[in-house]
Length: 245
Image (tube, rainbow, N blue to C red; front, side):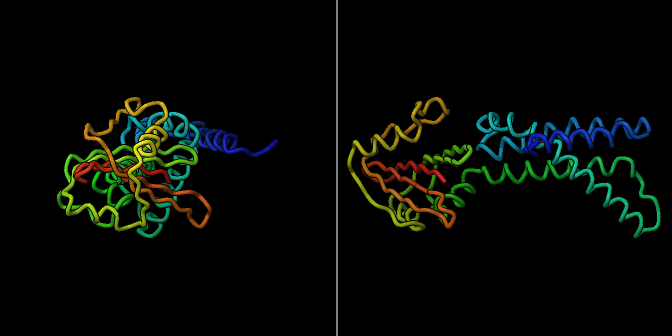
């Protein structure tokens, strides 16, 4: 029998269940365990969704598949670390720590909330813009909209915003782009990015006509492709940035 990730996850879940529920425990400990598992699963789902999308709604599809497979293994590992930390702390202090029944079960909750807060911060449009597009966010940027979704082999993102034309070069400073004004090429790039239509992902192109496109493409050391297209109107004050990492 091959050891697949699914089998390892199931084995981890079985071992955890045996350790958590079939060993003697008080009612207080059992209550703490059940509350911790249920709450941690919900938090872990939110964390996974925000890891795969710019919002919970965008990333929930992947989270529904990934979270149930990975939660037992991740939860069991964090819980084990919690018990080990409790043992070490009590050994160093040479006394029992108040609330010791609940402390190990609280660690997965604390770690999960920290992870959710971190992913939420990374999905703030200005933070994501700095991470994905430019080293400096233009001071004049406004109406900044952001969408991102991570799929196996793809990490797609889109920004739509207004900017003062004098700061347009700030957006272009990180990479070397090739410019085109070919309307067919611009339309094809937009259609290819979302083949099933932009409205299906809850994002729309600006009403202004996009007449210029700046394209960047490269491969990282592992050979994976990275691309980014910057589309603007004639005045260069309405901008759409599309990327795929």
